[in-house]
Image (tube, rainbow, N blue to C red; front, side, top):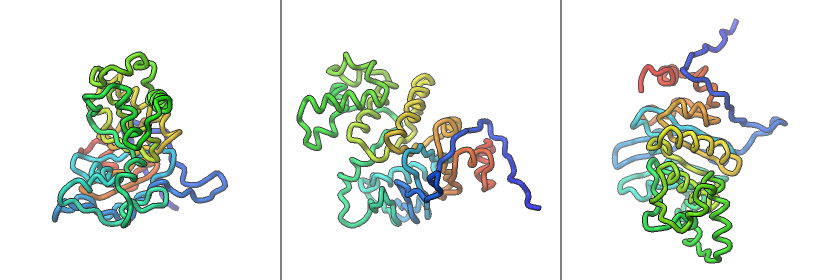
Length: 279
């Protein structure tokens, strides 16, 4: 008789799942697919043979101890390693059917499809709230003030910030609180309508109230985009993500629906990490 899966008792039990098929059973094409991805800094290999699919309209958490490769992998998704001397990426990262590392792919144009929100809020310090939101659109050549205002309003509403700043659009962005600045950075990313939104520890520098606002926002944002988030906070991964990927020493140890990864992990290393035995 086959033994039933062992139930590990993590300190939190997420309720989310990530559908891989339609209700009719047809396979869903992932919006993002990593195939045998390896990342090097000079002679040092930081990520080894990662294979990972991300489904459209989901929140996907990358977890693991510091230095395990999760941020390194995240940065590869929008070719940020192109800007690092000695860094090299092999394998394929396919975004909506296009290999982003293929010859002839315009990295700048590709990054417009992949937004990025960093650990610490980074609004442009010399710009107003409004100009921060529409900066990417202006770089793309949009100049119509009515269009820019419409996008700014839509993006700030999408980032749950409009009501707080609608009377402060022409004031410096640096006058906002830390949590507001982070939501402003999210609005700036949303303004160019990205296919994918990457978040690298987006709440680690925020107070609990601001963290809760960002987490609520992620649940809403997956209706219009797909999110990949790096987090050290496993409670956060459990609360907000549909799928979770556990990285360890550059390896993707396990990937699956968040409930499965936390409750019935397949690998004993995952079980040890999610139950707090190391990390």
